Image (cartoon, rainbow, N blue to C red; front, side):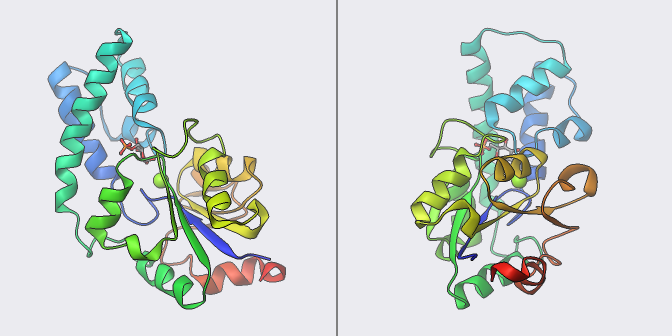
Length: 219
Ligand code: G6P
Ligand code: MG
């Protein structure tokens, strides 16, 4: 039986991809690196250090690890400053309604995000109250597609993976959910999350009603 829900943050609860893009773009411009929205799309769900690795590969750049960490920190400072502009108006359509609904129905809810800035983002949205457990980039060392972040959330919720539904918008996030034995809801196009157990174009469509109808025997 399904007793809990675990949510990715960026691209599921709110869309921080644009702010990540602008921060990486500022760094790339400063470094004289090529970086566009197409490359940015590859960073969805990917950790900060893996992200800079992808951008450097795209530019055939190689730097000592210490310098790479410093540059990633610089990008993060730009990104964190930009988070101040997020308000409770910035939920993706349907996300707040779903979180409210889950609270009303008594489901356990966890966050399972790769971001080390998730508590700041949740606070800006005034969304902290919807979560029993916060699992983020600070909670585990192995990032998605490893299932660790979702296993962390399930364990803290005192649930088994098969008792939880995971919402994800990233290919690597759906991989992580499946690797951990969770039921996966994919948010986005077929090419990205078509391997989830059920897929919706956006959060507005991914209501509790729809998810319950899909996993009929599990509720
Ligand atoms: C999320 C985003 C990624 C981002 C990662 C790390 O998964 O989708 O684009 O790189 O979090 O975020 P952070 O805030 O720790 O740099
Ligand atoms: Mg995401």
